[in-house]
Image (cartoon, rainbow, N blue to C red):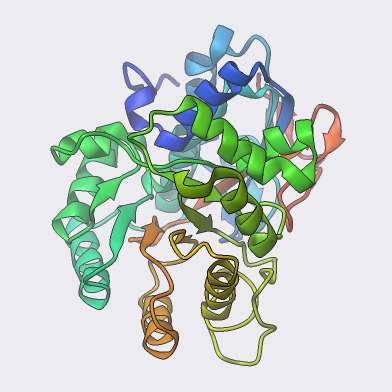
Length: 366
């Protein structure tokens, strides 16, 4: 089957993947990685694989000649967390494509397993509810990977209409008369630098490389949860970048108890794994104690949930200002596909809480 593809993948790619390819090129790095794709929601039947493969073949460097892609056949049964696809090859050949191939898999799997297409009015209503809860925060729409690229402008417009401030892709931004997509550093860049320089300095090295190569008009926001050393890596990055560092981003996954967080005591969204109120409070305290009051905190991971939003609002009522901005993708229900680097240059190397899950059911598709 032939699929309608965009003229270019770049307008529909999250800005931080575009930054990553530029940074890696400037740094002279292009590690051989294995990217692993899975869904949490299931079981069900997997769809969108064939379109994802066509996107990879069309837009990767050298038309995927340097890549090996394995996947479940279209329409196969799948289980939650089961590996659905792996992509192996030089990271710069395909790092810019994650937004598009995940969106293709998410949209097709969601609809063909009985889910609805996104309802634009509902998206605007949810965005407005979040804006009403957080009138003084910067709200970023980070959900382009959560649906097919052909919907990006429409969904981004719905989010902005509800009060969001910016979008992650140029297509979404331009549809709203904004300058361009926003975003700084993904886990893929931290892992690439972390493998080259070591886990202990990977987060700092990624932030320093961003600072060297990306326009000074873009705020320096370091991703600090990759190795589950959220507080230590935030402090180390603040020391390295000084006043150049605008903020740090927390995206701690549900597999991990964040450093500076508190074990689960039954207070949902306050304690336990993932990005919690006590984790953010602990990080804020550490930054302030080290003299980095100017470093802001940006949150992502699960903030389309109003109950979570309200917990953080209550957290600020208790502790004072904790964060400045939130990146939110889940403004509508779907079978969201996720991708992680799990091997680098032949070694198992992944963000904390994620690891290679071999699947003998995968077949070579590229």
